[in-house]
Length: 391
Image (tube, rainbow, N blue to C red; front, side, top):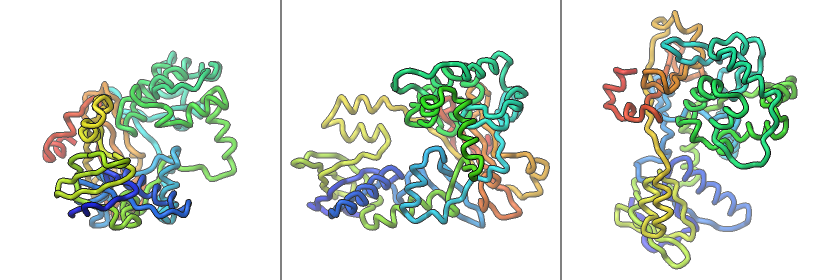
């Protein structure tokens, strides 16, 4: 779609994934609150908005190609859904079937019941778990005695768990689970960007174990929140609603080629020969693309951005007749995670039709494998037939 030469917008947003769409929507809403007229345009190189959020609906199946849900401990996505009028579409995870296993030495070993946010909340299952040595369990228990950290400097998620709960907890419990959720190495994850509630628990209660238990007592008479939430029609319902609200402001098949200064704003030239101008410029693009666009103007910043790592991951969804998995359906739980030292290319495996309702027809199961990640990045780039055969 050819852009309009000479048209000046309040903001030009490059990238029509969830970040770019949400920013454009937020800018427009904020302007409306201030009684201002504000125009933004979103340029998306693909032929559809949504980026990595992809939902396929076919034959009674709801198949996610990217993320499948919101993590309820981070409420911003839920708040955005409510702003978009999607609250009646929220579908909580079926935590009555919740159990997660760890692939260790070729065996699937269950995480102890009551293990939440990398913290044990029930003593008995924690003491009995084979995932930790006696020494590792004793080290985790030291969390009850350790002082809170002074200062408010950020640290990695891996360092935080290791400091509070010990090396085994970080490597055998929290690392594989949280690494699979965020598809990265916890040693490279900012605790404040990913799980800010954990340092807040430490600040308020000193001990993570005591803090989680206090929160559970406080919520004893309230309905316990589930771990995850999705949308009945799939997660793409969110990006579809955002695109609908933004209307013609979202321009697909419109790749940004270059940026130019234009007075106090920016001029964006696109691959179809068009051009748009904006007083504000938002780059909601992968690091390498962002660096390419800004290099002529900020070479040092571009060089720094290029160091931001990206890893590849692929999902493979499989459907089975219920009878074909009758020996497994009672104990499948949500699935399992694979730590980096296991000789497999899998990051995780999710039993999608147990995690959420209405993901498959009643006589079928839907499961999904995650391949690749930080240690097996190349595996995610195999041909589709090879991926399928490996899974």
